[in-house]
Image (cartoon, rainbow over the protein chains, first blue to last red):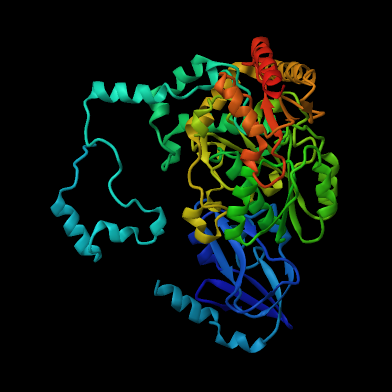
Length: 121
Length: 447
């Protein structure tokens, strides 16, 4: 699993990357009440807006950590957005992208580096 | 809070800080043609007694709607608002309170807005309503923006029966948002024409019923056609009392309802303030503009009210907000809620039936004048008639006789080629005597 400074995580399996927000982000947001997932087939570049996560008091953009095409979106979040708080780094995934450029992953942090980054906040 | 006016030194110091040479420099963006070349021609000061005398003399030159036969409608209607409504809204807690920014503290305000939303949803036959917009025209414009966001399509089709001022307001906002507006030609009874204009690029069709010519339509077929093409139907109503008699927009398949609530609780007020009603389906609620009151329970399990779904609004979403509106028409919404509560469902139905009966009397009476042709076949309380002369001139002539005959369509749309069309409304305030005087005056003017 790799991480961004915006608290997104990426888990790669073959050429498909699953993306979500980290436990730290979910905790900061508070109770998640809504997730706006991207449309299937949408092409996103690294850094583009991928999804929007809303809690009671805030709405945050989730950015694509890598470039790719949306091949799946977590439809279950529409009914149970609290999954993002309960299981942010597993069941609370937002979308899956078909990777356009796997080399982009090298620029992301591993868990050790991410935790070191969290300690500076 | 004290009012301490600025001194010349205060002004000079502020100008120095911002780097402007004088106050006039701050108005540099106003076109020269719109700028005053000197001070306004008013006396510098006058005693209270003299001011009263001067202003009363000015006011006497106006003829108010209640002074004689009055048939103006076209978006604002003369209805009877019971004195109890004004008595209640004059309470200082209601009259002076502003839109709540620590909303949960203002439980009373939130409760009446919740009741208002409930009434609007019930009246329009929709699943969710917001705490009001500024007026019907901006509500219609916001509805078009909302349909654009939901469908991600570029075009809105405006029916030929839509009030021209509403169409212009939509066009103004659409210009900023980059939505293409197609305005169909003005027509008394051509709502169905929007159907042939719907395609895969259509975000929404906007249909008014009763329309500006008074025609009431069943728009179910239009809803079906829009939905088949993936577009939304926005239904506009300028006469809220019509919802007491006609099939609700929700029942006819509307996706968004944008209406003017002025008819319930508010007088004509020289054109405002009014209150925009905005309602939609549950599935679109996150795209709704404006404030939304919700009901919840507190930590002790007691019922309470909140402003909910605030994450749509600009103080959280900034440029991605559903709208830049950050307030509502609170006092008018309260007056609406009070008046409607006093009427109740039964009272509203009876009021609506009375309006319709008066309009039928009006149409029948005018129909007997050979020079006048009643153009509207299916109406609630408003009709369009064709005259053998420019309607504006006829209205002027009758005004000189103390009869306000209605709104010439040319006032709303000077380029529509419908200069001989006059719009008339009848309400529960219209008497048999009024209708008789109007009819006789028209006969005389058109002889």
